[in-house]
Each structure stands twice: as C-alpha cells, then as structure tokens.
Length: 261
Ligand code: ADP
Ligand code: MG
Image (cartoon, rainbow, N blue to C red; front, side, top):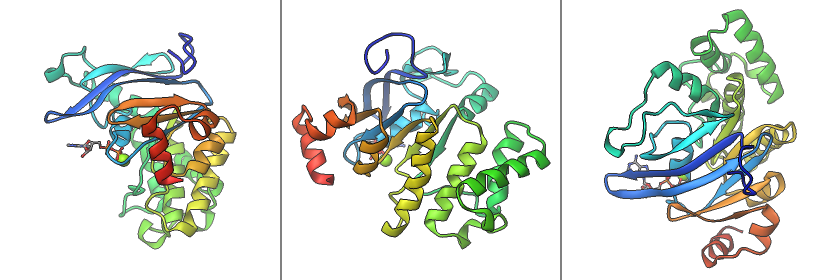
C-alpha cells in the first residue's frame, strides 16, 4: 500500500509491524509506505514507539511480525513465528542495512577514528570499496556538509552540529536507498540545530527518500510529503503536513501538537 492507497509503487513498504519487549507491546501493527524521493516524518510523544519503528525498519531490532521491503526487496527475515524469528543470512542483513543508513540522536561516530576514517569505514568494510577511492569519496561528502577543514579531526574535537553533519556524510557514503533519521537535532544546543537541518533540507531537495523522526515541526511541515503521528504503538493519524498541522483529526494528535508547537 502506498500512502494514498494505491498498490505497488512504494519504495519503502512497512506492513503490519509488531514488536514487544518482554510483554510490553510497543508496536501494535504499523503499516505505511514511502515513495521514492518522498520524505516521511514520524512524530509523536516520547515512548510512542518512534525509535523502535526506525530500528525495526533497519533491523537493529527484529520485528516480531510484519514485513519490510525496500525497492521491492523484502527484508531477509525468516517467516513469521514470534518466538523463533531470526535473521536468515548475516551478509544479506549487512547489505540490507546498508541500503537504509541511519543517523542517530547522539551521532554514534567512532571516537577512535578521525572524521574521514568514520566516513570511509562502512564503504571499505561492508561495500568493499578500495581505500583510496573511499577516502576520495569521504572527502567529497565531508566537503558537501561543510567539513573540509575537519577531515583529520577526531569526533571529540568537533561541536555537536559538526559531529552530526559528519554522521550524515557517513550515512551518505553507504549510498543508501533510504535515509533514516532518529531525532537528529535533539541532542544539539539550539544554535547548532539550523546547520544540521540545512543539510537535511538539501538532501530532501535533491530527492532523497527519507524517514525522519523529529520534534522540529517547522522542518517536518516544510519538507515532508507525509506526516505520521504515532500514538501508543499505532498510527494515530497520517496525512500531508497541511492536514496534520492545520486540521488534525484526533484529540491525541491535537494534544501532542499543542505540547510541541
Ligand atoms: P520513542 O522513540 O517514541 O520515544 P521508543 O521506541 O524509544 O519510543 O520506546 C517505546 C517504548 O518501548 C518505551 O516504553 C520504551 O521504554 C520501550 N522500549 C524501547 N526499547 C526497548 C528495549 N530494548 N527493551 C525494553 N523496552 C524498550
Ligand atoms: Mg526515540
């Protein structure tokens, strides 16, 4: 299903995802799609399952039930069977994960590597790109996010905004089909939020397919084709940003928006 209900055109297709943690049902059947070049924003209160959903999409968590497909390829999971679900092939999983690069709230850069090495690591280790080529690509990507003068710096010597821009360059280096962002600006000092959103806005403008968990409602409104409001592990409502932000249909969404806007 696509966001408008037509079958067969989704680039990312998430169907009936369930996840529980020791009896706590965190995702209770999530279905949505994103077409190529679309930006989908996930909003919702803390604890509503946004991070768990993103982590299920890229297999950092294994969904108990449901299917995920990217560009027509299903995620390499054994058939549903709640307690015995497992990853069928580690190499398939690495490649699948590489097609869905994730940017985390806390950057998650490798502290013992320079920024350039951080960006090269995935391409060299997972995609088997020759080192010289990976280094060149890393420099080009770091230039794009405005970090040409920080190639040999270690993460600890960068501001949060610079670290997050490096993390975005690292995600891009994997040539992902889809970029996943989990509250990429929430850990930043307010004055550093803009530089990261600017990079993300550029990515949206150039047609990247993105799923973004964010509390930046202005950003969500500006760049998203579709906004999904998660509420207690379900999709509370979804629609184009004008609809969600101007005339939400549910009390839960109205209340949530009142609390963040
Ligand atoms: P959000 O990102 O919307 O704030 P999360 O997906 O992080 O929400 O969490 C949803 C719920 O799942 C919370 O109640 C959280 O405590 C719980 N949860 C998330 N990850 C785990 C885990 N690994 N083990 C147990 N509970 C978890
Ligand atoms: Mg979260």
